Length: 184
Image (cartoon, rainbow, N blue to C red; front, side, top):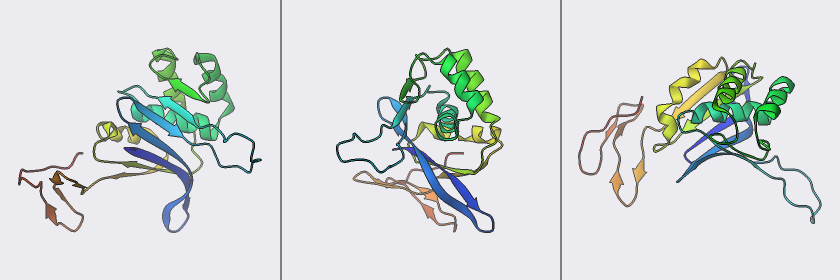
């Protein structure tokens, strides 16, 4: 997992988040957003509930995840109706966004999801090697309550230490002493 989005509500006085759902991004040879099914009480002989998996577009990976979040968690009826017409697959189970929907339709759904009045808060956490680091500034295009968490320090074994500057001003360096800058 290289990034995740927690969906929940914030405390009226303290901030933070009361997590309710989590969308995970896995970036291996092919990225995928995974929304695990909600746990439920079921008989022992029943299969476990399915998860939803979307293979995002590379350049729209963040927006694709946020669209998935709106469609699969909040399920606004007007957006669901449009998605059902535009997708050429059962997007509630699995969708490959570069194949299963026309790109103009995908752009339209992203724009509609951006306008959705999110009833709560999201926290987007992006780890060091995630492709989302280059896209995270797009979160500003969404009028939602959101926090973005990125890495400031990492120790990668067995290769050594990566350098960064911690919040208290402490500088850390690569094992070979080369300069290091944090992503913006």
